[in-house]
Structure formats: structure tokens, C-alpha cells
Length: 292
Ligand code: NAD
Image (cartoon, rainbow, N blue to C red; front, side):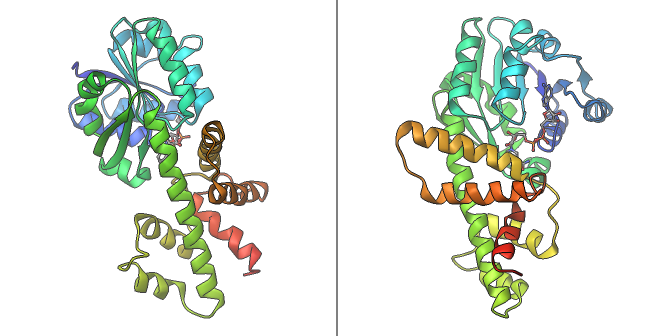
């Protein structure tokens, strides 16, 4: 597999992921609509391109790390998009968290041009993107997965193939249900403990080694207690993911009562103006209910 790869989308996650690829010895051609992000990567050794088309013209494998389905469609299928520059046999690995049906639709359009695609969303958040220990869940042909594995592993702690195209994003929405419900549970528990007169910091220290301990508890409880809601993972991105969850669950006939409830909590935070904060600000929803 060529050491020269494209990387489009240098935000909270994409920037450190791209830097890890540079450190692993890959040559990168990068692109983002935010110039400062491109400049930072260029300083770290990447080459920049003006459009996704130009990225694809110069590379055989193109990674994308964008907010949501419409951004992925624009960057891959739109004007000056990847599809206009990609050569037959090229591979697009979209690492954004998007609707599984859109992954399949984009893959179909690329296939008509002889371009392969993986959907390879990630979990772990910014700290793990920086450490190179994110979890990657991948859908697509096994053979294409195996060819891309070393590249994905250079940014990740684990890289697991979960099925055909779309399976990566189905795995990701399962992940997002668990994360959202966990954050709601942590919020509910800490607000209760606090209002009942026990220091939430001591509650956290007491329970984190027991069955209630979790990666979510360790990542999000300290943020709630420190009142540090700098993202991380924004409420508006989690609403986007839960939209993708509910669209998929309605499509296959699976009722998700708890997910629907947390979705409404996040919508309420959005109405209150917190959509750009980290999803740990879900605790504010409970504080409002309990008049803390
Ligand atoms: P972000 O908003 O920080 O970054 C997205 C980047 O895409 C931005 O730099 C933006 O300028 C760029 N972009 C948007 N449209 C573009 C276009 N047309 N051409 C070129 N660049 C364009 O988002 P993020 O937090 O890095 O998340 C990216 C994806 O990863 C999302 O799907 C998110 O759900 C997922 N994710 C995020 C986290 C997290 O903790 N932040 C964790 C796991 C997965």
C-alpha cells in the first residue's frame, strides 16, 4: 500500500489522526475549508491541496473525517469532489460518523467509477485521537479492509471489521446509544448524590472501581464536576448521531425508548443554547429539573 495518502477534514479528531499518520511515516496530502487547520498540518510536514478533487488526483487512498452525511456527500460526490479526481482502483475510507444508508449510497456511486470504499467511523474522542488509541469499526470488502488495516492501525488501538459497507456506521450508532445513555446515567446519579448531601467527587472516587465504573464515567464525571464543558464531543454532533440511530431503528422496526428520551434531553440543551458544548453538559439538563 502506497505511503502517500489523502486526508480531508482536519477538525477536533481529524487533525490529531492526520498527525499520527505523519509520525508513522506516511506522506499526506490534506484539505479542509479551515485554512488554519491546513496550515498546522503543513507545518507538521503534510502537503496541502485546494480541493478534495486535487487530493484524490495525488493519492490512491483518501481518508475523510467530516461532521455528517451531507458534508461527506459534498466532499466525495460534489463539485471538485473526490470522485472527480479519483483513479480506478483508488480507495476512499470515510471515518466520519454518518447514516449507514448514506455510506452505502456513496459507495455505490464510487463503485460506478471503479473506486472502492470503506466506512470506518471511530470512537474514543480527542484524547484517544491524540494518543493514537481510538477504536475503528469498519464496513466494506474484507480484502479492501486488509489493505487499509496498517493505515488505520497507525491511528488506533483497535481496528475491527464488522461486515459489508454500512456495517461500520451501524456499529458506531450502537456505540453512540451506549455512550449517550451512560452520560445520562452518570448525570442522573451525580445530581442526585449532590442534592442528597454527598460530595459527588467522593461518590465518583468510591464507585469508579466497582461495577458502575466505565470509560464514560472516568471521562465525563470529572468534566461535570469541574464545570469544564469544552468539547470533546459536541452536543450537536451527538444529536446528529442519535438522529442516525433513530432513522435506522425506525427503518428496521426496533423501538429504542431510552435513546429517544436522551435525544429529547439533548434537544432541550440545544434550545437552551448549549449545542456547542461537550455532551457532558447533559448534567445541566438534570440540574435544571432538580433546580440545583
Ligand atoms: P469537527 O467539526 O471538529 O471537524 C470536522 C472538520 O471537517 C472541520 O475541520 C471542518 O472544517 C471540515 N469540513 C467540513 N466541511 C468540509 C468540506 N466541505 N471540505 C473540507 N473540510 C470540511 O468534528 P470532529 O469532532 O472532528 O468530528 C468528525 C467526525 O468524527 C464526526 O462525524 C463526529 O461525529 C465523529 N467523532 C467525533 C468524536 C469527538 O470526540 N469529537 C469522537 C468520535 C467520532
